[in-house]
Figure (spheres, one colour):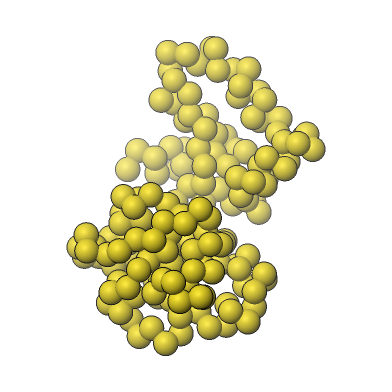
Amino acid sequence: LKPAFVGMRDGANSQKNVLTTRQETLDIDAAKAGQIASARSVEYTKDLLREVVGEAVEQCKILTVPKDMDALISLGLGMAKSAITTAHSLQEFARMNPALFQKLKTLAETQESLLLIVAVSEQREAEAQELIAILRGMPDQPNGKENLKMLGLDNWQPLGTSDLMTLEK
């Protein structure tokens, strides 16, 4: 696959994930002991946890939820001991529910990672040009803007040299 472009949100093409708990949770070990709510696959959630915890996480119990907001609500309602979400989602949650947000704290965060990447098959690159043009035009169309918003994005950007180097790691 050949990367074509990367999503943008508020002028940035990358994000961090954060491990968040309730204020009374003392540390990462205590957070790992309970359920961890996540809107990602169990495998990817454990990869993120390995990055922030730096040790084996195979015994962690993952509560899979549809969206980051659901993970944070699960945490707030006591259904999970911690949640792993994007920092952006945590900021949105602070605006939506400031009272519950005040009861939370961030224990750890990941390195920056690129937002959604659009890639095309190198063998079918010519055939993909129409689809690429449609996706690139999304910000200019009312329905396209709404669809981008559902993806948590507001635009697309060609990948720069540093972005390509990040992907190769």
